[in-house]
Image (cartoon, rainbow, N blue to C red):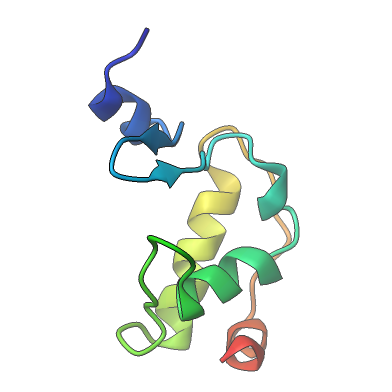
Length: 86
């Protein structure tokens, strides 16, 4: 069984102080609107980052998690997508 740090670095999620779902091969990331909304507004243990990151930064994070960790959702995330989630 991988160590918790190793699991997190591979996007496999973690259980500890909370339950953190995996980024790896996560079908919830197929629609870009879901991770955009979560990053902007937060959810449960995930704080909102909408006031700290601009639209371009959020789009870059969403594109990264959707194209890494075994995910292959390559449709672009636009600045309009992020702006509409705010």
